[in-house]
Length: 394
Image (tube, one colour):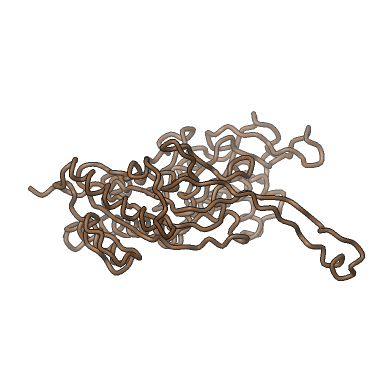
């Protein structure tokens, strides 16, 4: 009996030029000590957000993560429903206060000891489909008469006059974005969603250094008049460059459960995630670095048993080729490790594997070469979801 597909693993080798895709709290390049050398690192949270942005464009759905859901509703009521600003602010505050999430009032920017009435900030961020804002505004519209006679929200102990169960129902709503990436919202019963994708921190396959870039900004008037020397501003910033290994996996069983076993939606969301993972890039400092490369290699494997990261292939740092460059030896090391690891585990659970990239040489250990990223994704989906289309189900 054939084993059903459970996981789709995607591995990427990608060269990133001089950039700082992901900074820490001191604006420094994120790093990690691995294999006794320092590597440049991009956190999974950073790259996952970049993936989510592209993913939302692919599927035409968006999700909203915010502490300011009340203010967002206020804006809709004032700008789209024509409500007076003060009533819209009161309605937004009662919407936020009706959730089971504790809240506080925003501070007056001119006097930090004073709170601003009706400007409610929930203590935890809600994560809802963008359409939830419209639903909450419609809820306020249905209770407009009650809101017109209600008191302002002036302190965290104040109670909302709106039905809490209706607000909570909206906060539990989900769409394709939340079904794929998951949601943690412990304050609202049954609002949590286990994510169907796992994304690793990206790290360079080799040792890297952080470069300090000293810069100055010329004052145009000073330069034109020539009456002073020097710049109008000086500073420095950190950057790095290298060849990264990136990895993610999709749990098809979890995703199918999240969406209610809709085969067409399962294919759409999986394809959109794989495509977004291949082509996304964190946007930090993009205006001064424009690091918009594409992967040198993308490898996808459909597995029936378990996810398998190849990060350990680079525990021993890759050395540059004789003529320089880390990408070519990194691709070779990845293919060699894949062959060894799959030999240890056995290949029975590999249902399909393939790759697409810039290599002119074959990488037979990575499966069938595909002409491009789209055909690579299609080949994986055709195997992983065989027999699961709506037509097949009928």
